[in-house]
Length: 326
Image 1 (cartoon, rainbow, N blue to C red):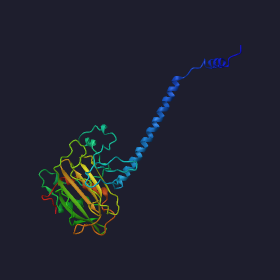
Image 2: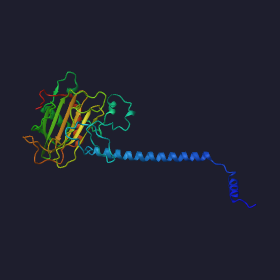
Image 3: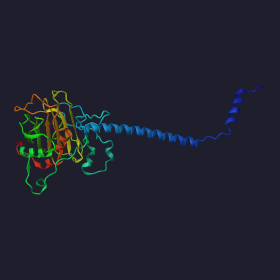
Image 4: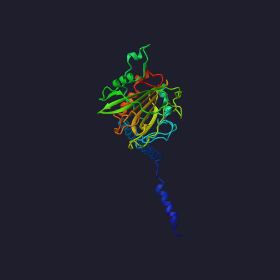
């Protein structure tokens, strides 16, 4: 009987593996180690990318300018800024968006910090300048009115390290419709004056008690629209909650006076107080129009201008009846 090659091959393979023992536990353990290594490598790559984006955004914020370059359409209510993209830029939207906090559900704080459910102000905090004086904090102290004289003295104190000088200026020919007290000053630096428009008032709008973003018509200020005539300078508008619980908007464009680039900082405090300060890149003429010569940008650095507007001293002022601070 001739041998069967298939049977011989099968018998040979059976004999060769009969005494082998498969190390299942070793294989499983090694697979687990490799899986952990891959997960760790992936987490490190993600963390590295996140830190890089955060570093870009932080560096850009501290350079003194907002990190966005877009505007809502005409008449659009201000909305929160969108989360930072890989380029370090932010873009505003006319409607509320989810919090920029990566995981707002993790917040366990109370009070002002509970406003994490709304959009946090996306730029880095600025130094606090200006300490409330005893005549402001003493019970029964006289009320400080938001007048040209008092505001000019306050600004000189807040800008003591700058070389510029302040003086009276022509009103900006614009109807804001907010009923606020308005003070117009000239700030002169390098022999080139610019106009400062400082508005202070109180609103009857209800501040969001739950810390959510104010919707259309629910905030006392909003993003405006750039005219497109300010030599294509970078335009920006963003808003969000500060750590103290107030709502802040910053805007860099020529929306306040067409053709005149400006830095605007507006703050809405929970008690209804509204501070709205604009610094222009030129001096507004008698007829309310921008001058023929303007600076490349306003002379007071953007971060310092934010510190001026955010100073706690303004919360001790009161508006002038009739909406004028002259």
